[in-house]
Each structure stands twice: as structure tokens, then as C-alpha cells.
Length: 178
Image (cartoon, rainbow, N blue to C red; front, side, top):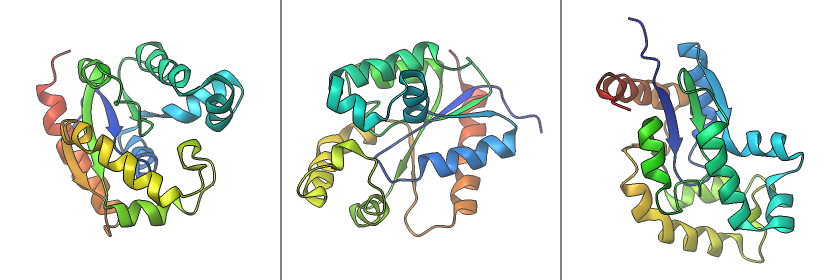
């Protein structure tokens, strides 16, 4: 069966597996893969952490909007969106006009385990990263709950998650109307 050409946007909290799942699906479909944070870093010539430090979060959120509107092809792409990309008002609606949106979800415990291994997340460069994760998760939970079909990634093999996301994507892409 020929895959639809509609873009797939993977959204969700940091550490839910958006990049890993996105890369795998892009390989399977022969689509291009984009990680919004990495693309912004490449375009700006500096890390997300440095952008936050030098220009602030509001400026970074504008860079995310610009990436969604102009930073990738209009079809045959899988985009792993930064955890806060859909937080600004209107951002989720914008994504929904450009492709299928699927939200990856994990428990706070899983997120803490996964994000605790990295030092590149600017929102966690605080005295108490666990407290920050819990506060952000609570703040964003309702937004993620309205962000399309949700797929749980806790304690599931990548292959299983990818298969589930692909099934949802194919169903929703067949009905997608830009």
C-alpha cells in the first residue's frame, strides 16, 4: 500500500520519544525526518540552550512557528516537535492545518528517567530539574490532551510504538483535509 504524502507531526512532552519514533517512521515510509529543535539550532548556528539564554524563550517560540510555516516541505515529512512547540495559543491549530498530529505520552517517572540522562534541555537547567518537569508537565498536560491521538510510550519497545503510530497515521492521513 502506498503511504499517504501528508506530513506527520509528533508532539508531546520532552522525553516521550518523538525523535526516536519519528526517525524510525521516516525510514519506514521513505519520508524526510526533521527535529524542530535541531533544525532551529542549525539555522541559528547555536544550541537551543544558547538561544534561550541570549534571546529568551519567547524568541525561540517564534523561531518554532517560523519553522512550522516555512522550514520544511509541505508533504512527505515526519517532524518531531519540541515539547513546548504547541503551547503558544494557535500553534496546535496551525499544525493541524499542515498534517496529522499525534501526541506521544509517557509517565512523569519515565520522563524523569529519560531526561535525566541529558544536559541539553534548557528548561531543565535549574536547581531542581524534577520539580521543573513536574510543574511543566502539569502546566502542559491539558494542551497535550487536545493534541490529537495519544500514544503511550512507557515501557514499550520502539518497534511496537512505531507500529501503533503508523497505523494511526495511515488512518488519519487518509481523512486529512488541509
